[in-house]
Image (tube, rainbow, N blue to C red):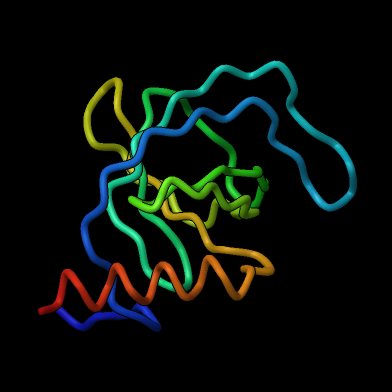
Length: 115
């Protein structure tokens, strides 16, 4: 299988909750309680699973915490969805306007995992 990703993804276990989804045209889905489990991360995005069906090309803000207990806010765009089984879905989210500090932490995590 040919790898299509621009950067290496490594496993990570984070639990997030999506409250609001929005599109660039300001339309959105609000008061959503969609727990997600982040399964992998790279400097371009994350892979995650959820029991909720989430629409492609919508955005959400996520708080990402690494082991240094510093929280970073990032915007993710939902770019991929696959059905795992009847009640679980696998998603790909692309980072939008990633902060330099979060990018550095992701690179550190990737290099630690790769050693």
